[in-house]
Image (cartoon, rainbow, N blue to C red):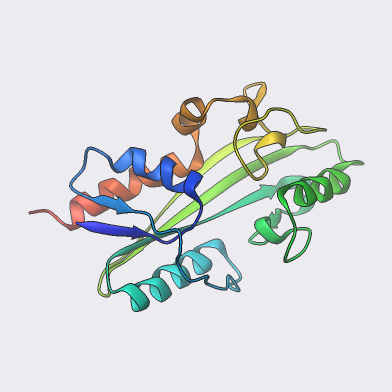
Length: 190
């Protein structure tokens, strides 16, 4: 079964595709997808909206994802607004700088990333989540990854200090993807 991945983010696609490579499901990447406005109150709401809108346009099964960074000391901000934390057109650096500024006077740096994957094929609706716990650093470190990776630390290293393969082994997206593969395999038994 071919499944369209509802994102233009090649890094996210590579992480998910790696999990599905030896399965009966082929994840398809399309870098000219229409944008879907993420205006829901939750990351699962945004993932569901993306799956449904992309399915309606392309009429093939879709997996979408939405992820968020949740920082305990900030009342779980940025959360659903992770990609737009410093504004609608903010860069990753803008978002990181705002987050670090908001944490300057806080001792608690506990945070977690959550990814929700949502599958929709016009009939079946399946969703999974993956969580990666860590801490926010006081300044960016590392050259790899994307988004908040340079300030999210797990086991003494930021995600940006890990190689793609190292990050892929522990990522929240990997956890959600493995759960989704199991759910799809169970749902679409031949």
